[in-house]
Length: 207
Image (cartoon, rainbow, N blue to C red; front, side):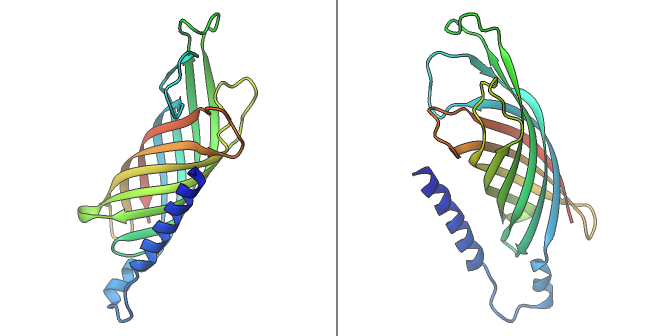
């Protein structure tokens, strides 16, 4: 069911994109809007590992800082829709704390490194604001059996709301609060997997 939902999202976004193509006969000025763009971003983040439903017992969880850096290439651009691909590296920390049900457990912090490949879709609004919804494939780089956090290999999503600021004719700054949810559809069967969830303030240069 979850795989079908993500597949449907990709199909819908692709359909919207090609539905936005302008007819033949655009002016030269309009054609300038179709050029490819590159975005390089960094982000301080707060990270936590969450179940997809309430769970009784087990260790507690706290937010911990991390960081993210990404590269995106948009090969299709017009007045409303941008479409492209991206590569993102994230370092995250997931902290687990003892509670009355965890016995002698004294706490643990899992330090997690992941790399994500995403299908980037941006819907541009007025005054250089935009919405972004990106299906992604995540691979964890440093999993070991001592981690409480499940392996994050799987399909996920990221969502952001942002704004562009013109620095000059060829360079823009983008600022976007962003949410990443990894491992929504794991690559292996897991019972109540913990999903790395990341909140960040993404700052990028677009050229």
